[in-house]
Length: 470
Image (cartoon, one colour):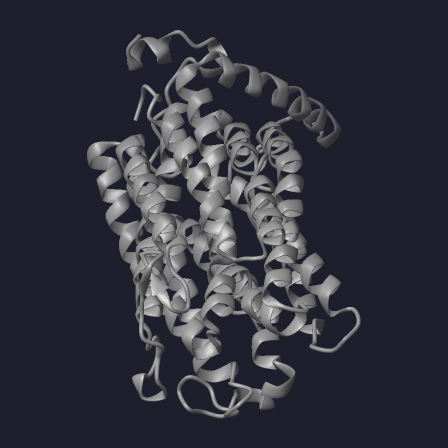
């Protein structure tokens, strides 16, 4: 069966390829693109490079326990998303407009991010506040993304889906880069020197001893989202409201979840892609969640090393997302996704082979000396290089995933299918972090993390290879 046969054999619910969208104005598209800019500081500052390593190094009893606890929190957030995303996406399709849902999620994200400020070292409630705030914030920002993604078919025609999606990811990475420079250059200072990466005293009198520069990432992410989400509400047109009451829309939305899953299961192109996405996105979430923690635990990286690492990774992510979007439109989403998965497998193997005193498992290296500067040892340099590769391919992997689905489904049903995409990306998103947490606890080594993720990427790659349409 060829791609045309697969599409034409669908029942009416999914029989048509995405309807051609009218071209939205530049200001409307910019408003949509700024959603990624608004959200990214939460992922960059909280999930990966600043707050997560702070949690493992300063709040948890030790880095291994910190990685395990962070993994359990990530798993709980993923399990919650698995239930919420497809249901809310279907309800939003039934009601029509997506902006009210984004606004509601934004309020939850704002409150949960702000709460992270109160996770102070030594406070008896610091660990639960950090984990609950992070978990709820993760759910809120990911659910908001479901509704934002569902607007893609209403903004540009299908032949521009890849470029729009890739540009969104690139702008998001750039937003993460700017926010990271602000935090490391002006807010977060070393507890040893009292100075930021730029050699300045932290603004607003933030106390390095109390790690206030690390904790400020929560409130900063909240305020950043509030400011930069506004163009979406002002300039980007929403989808027309349906005639259904909210009660009827909820009932219809819940019924559509079952129908959507059944439709996807009957059609190999959609169902197999969603299953593959479920597996490789699970691994990618875990890879980002533990990247900074791994550097802090294995190499003893402090705020300076982690910050520069994050800045460089974000730069490669921005470039990768821009290039990936164009490769997507030219060659198709499937080759981009497969190439990214292969590279991520090799990266995880490379990370697995590193230790404080060796590379490639058995090659011993000379310890870093004080005059060697940042990333003085060979293992640190290799880990840095591998991290830059992760940044370069993660954006294309995620951008091509949403552009592929946007091409496969009708525009007026995009919300429920992007809800299903979120379900496929989150229904087992607790599994990889959970397996990393369990393996780390069982073997008492952080090297267990990348070993687990290789298996997930291989499984996802095997599934996506069988997708007929790319």
